[in-house]
Length: 308
Length: 152
Image 1 (tube, rainbow over the protein chains, first blue to last red):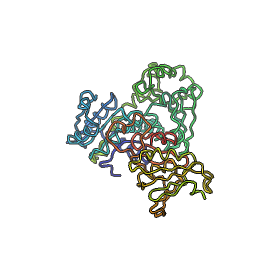
Image 2: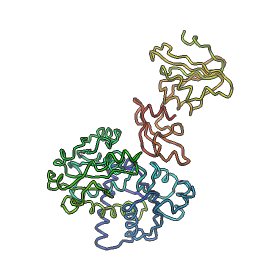
Image 3: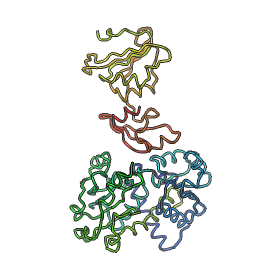
Image 4: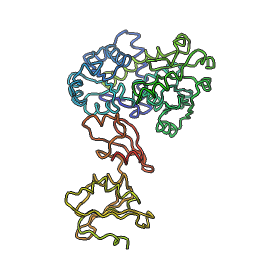
């Protein structure tokens, strides 16, 4: 499969073969990195990271991935330090940045911004989150994590807990999981249900979907519990956020009913939806999940740059 | 005969087989209330129709619809047929069709879509015709008929 020059914008653009190809490339690179300590595939290449919205993990893991591939990185971490503050359009920003780099990673608060950036740019563009729409690289690292933990994705019962309405990671993840033979438990307060069109799409693709507000009632069924925080910044008003704040929490008491080998994942940052006491249990794998961001993003960068 | 209930036009366009009740919307979308050539616009509502039971008809004097305009009508009146009239005769007749991709006609209903903030032509994929449902190429949000009509 030749991915040279390809944009990574939405999980919708991916086939199951594409996903598997990225996952196997990530696995190969992770092994190679462990053996050699440092790789040279992207030597002489420059990644531009354009973060119009705050991020810790996504930006740093992209930058780490590029450095580990032997390449270098330029960019900005907030729009206020760029000419965007002077009113420059996204279109002009992209046209400028592509003169300085070989690949662009963009996070933007407006939905569809990454797609527009990809249309404007001649060089490959990778979406690191566009508003509440897509976050495909998070999805790929989530799938990579599940596969690494269980050796498979098919046959698993996966619970998505929390803000299923505004959380872009759960939207992308649910769409990607539809390629696999999984059962999905959508667990959320009534106000934060998964958008109807996504639930319908999942059902159309043959996924068994259960919707509930009661985590305790279903936790005993699950192999994976994927927890997300309330996306405070995407709520239309603070009042609505306060109504659901703290309405769900995973703690040791809730976990008493869980299967022995239940794995708890979280895209992070967390607020109060997983109690810190859970961190030391064998269920908690969210920091291993963070690690997996690097090999997956190395794979994507290497593939779209055509250097692997 | 049905057609004689409103007078014939010499030059222009007759939009027939508009679903009953959608005629005013067609006029509104095509901005026919503000024709610069001063031509008359005739609207017949709730006319008996073999095909539709009841239908609306819009006759526009002195205006020939362009392809882009026809696409706009297709979204509200997928059953419509368009007749181009010259010297009282139908010289061209075609059915409007909802295309697979709708470009530049619709606004996205998602207020946070990048298309509201940047210089860009909107683009939607038709994912279902019955009931009508489209997806924004940019923000990927889907819109159903009611939202589509409100954003034409």
